[in-house]
Image 1 (cartoon, rainbow, N blue to C red):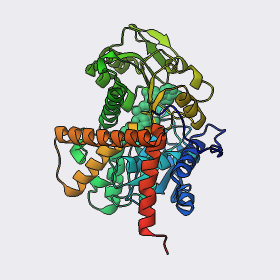
Image 2 (cartoon, rainbow, N blue to C red; image 1 turned 180 degrees about the vertical axis):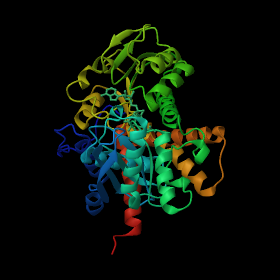
Image 3 (cartoon, helix red, strand yellow; image 1 turned 30 degrees about the vertical axis):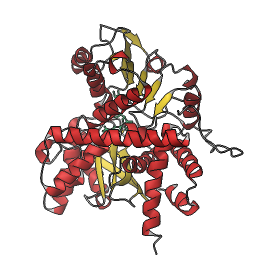
Image 4 (cartoon, rainbow, N blue to C red; image 1 turned 180 degrees about the horizontal axis):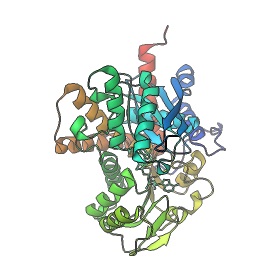
Length: 430
Ligand code: NAD
C-alpha cells in the first residue's frame, strides 16, 4: 500500500518545481482536488486564505530604544468553526509561510474532525536576541494589533515554534484587559492556573507517538524493535524522544538548531535533557557522536521524525533518506517533489496533518473546558486524544488502501473533503 502516487493517466502532476511551503501546500491541495474530483468553485475558494492581516509590531527595548518587527495572522478558512492555529516567533516568518501553515491547519482540524478552521500567525523575530521583558512587551503589542481578529468564537491562537505557555498567558491577559473580564478561551496552550488543559504541553508529542504505534502495527513491526531519529529538540521533539524511549524504542539520533547527536546503541533522552538544561543545547553532550542536521536526516533507522522546520527533505536529499517510515511531527518538512521520491522508494510517509494533530486536538479539549468552565483529568485528556488519533489514523489508512492513495493523499482527501462539504452545505454568500 502507499507505494505509488495516484495521478490519473494522461494527466500531469501539479507544478511544484519550487520548495517553498506555500507552493507545497498549493500543490498538495491541487493534487487532492484532482484525485477526488473537487467542485472547481470550492477548489478556487480553498486556494486562497479567507482573510489576512499584516501588522507592524513596535515595542520598547530594555535600553529605551524602539524596535519594530512585522507580524502576521492569516485565517485560511472558518467554514467549519473558529480559526485555530499557532503563533510562531522566527526571523524567517514571512507571509507566504504563514499562509501555508494556516492552510495545513484547516485540513488538520478536518482530518481529526474537530470543529475549527485554520489559522496561523507570528512575528519575524529571533527571540534569542531579546530579554524576556522585551518579548513580553512585543507579545502584548502583537496581541493588541491582532485583537480584532481573535477571540473564542473567531480565532484561538496556540503555541508554535519559539512560543510557549507564558507567551499564551500574556496574550490571554492582553485580550482580557481589553474586554474587561477574563477570557480564557481566547488562546490554548496556556498554563493550567488560568484555564489551560492538563496534558496540553505534551499533546503533540503524545499524538505523534500514537500515530507511530498505529503505523508500526499496520507494518507488522514491534515497538521495541525499531530505531528512531528525531530532528528538533523543542516542545514536540524533546518530549517525543523521551516518550518513545520510555515505550521501548531505540532513539539513535536527535538534534536541535545547533547540531545533532548519534549513538547506534541508543541515546539516553533524560541525560540529554539534563545536559541541555545546563548547556542550552543538545550539542556537546559527551555520550554520543556529533552529527550535523543534514546527517541526521540520512541516518540508518526505522523511523525518521522531522520535528523542527519546513522543507528539510527536498529533491536534493530525498534519495538519501534511509528510514522505512518518515513521520512528520513538524509542519511541511517534506517538499511536494521530495514526497514523491520517498513514496516511489517505498518509504511510508505519515503526513503532518495527521501525525502532529494531537496538539490541536487537545487545544480543542482546552477550548471546550474553558467554555464550559469544567475541567478534565489528565487521564481523560490522554484517553480521548488516543481515541481520536487512532480513529483518524485508521480512517486515513483505510482510505489509502481502498483507493490506492498515499497516506498524504488520503489525509488531504478526508480533510479537504470535509471542508468542501461544509462549503457546499452552507452555500455561497450572498
Ligand atoms: P520549538 O521552538 O519548541 O522547537 C523547535 C526545535 O527545532 C528546537 O529544538 C530548535 O533548536 C530546532 N530547530 C530550529 N531550526 C532548526 C533547523 N534549521 N534545523 C534543525 N533544527 C532546528 O517548536 P515546536 O513547538 O517543538 O515545533 C516544532 C515543529 O512542530 C514546527 O514545525 C511546528 O509547527 C510543529 N508543530 C508544533 C506543535 C506544538 O504543539 N508545539 C503542534 C503541531 C506542529
